[in-house]
Length: 346
Image (tube, rainbow, N blue to C red; front, side):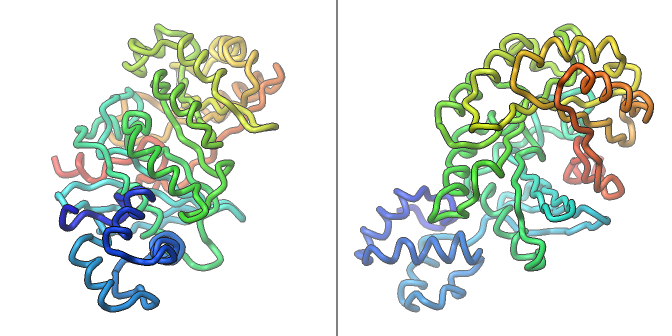
């Protein structure tokens, strides 16, 4: 066994193998999982139901954490966490408060390779994928900071990076999040947002995890989408829509499409009409996201009237539609604003 591996980088089967090698009794697996995924342990010395001798062995073989909270910024309705990795990189996660719901927005990569024209995160140089442990520890560390009455109810992979470009670590982390021995979160409360990496989206559907995908469209036809999202050249709209329609959904669940509204670019009624024709054959809902502005942004937010008219057009044509209210703009925690200070350092 390699020394000093982050312990949450182990799958359940690898953790069981390790315990067998150490000649630990079978109950030790559930006991250890309870400390790691129920009690959110960040130090092996916290594991008071485990003998000091075995705690010492765990400390010799593993790291209890692979990321650390460097800064926590708060605004009414939202919090942004800046994390530092062991190799010196930074990335961010966001908590959003909405009545009885507390949503954790998780990162899957450090930086983003997709460079969508309207997203500030796309300006951050891509560094690397986050590991399984780094994904899981976002949940662990933030959970420890929250008040008991504001525990996390929903998870969305919508922070930094494209989750499906980090497929292996994403799925391994999801399986621990969903498992009874892990965080035991219902798949109905987990959303994975993607620009539509078609092969990975199909593969994710085959995993039968019961989670919800959210497909970022942002334009109703290819020529405009390619200008806004270069990935459209590789995975054009018709391929993305087809893969989305084939994704297995739980009963009474709708496929989610996300559409960032850019003033004077994709927010006209003509765009709304094309969007209706694109998504209406699907059991779907559309989340409209008015652009969250940032310094140097090449686009402008849509007017409130344009948002209202766009939403009304979709609803009048029987497309379930919601306008997402932005929170955290004051601390650059809103959708498309995350940079983990890379840009501020220039």
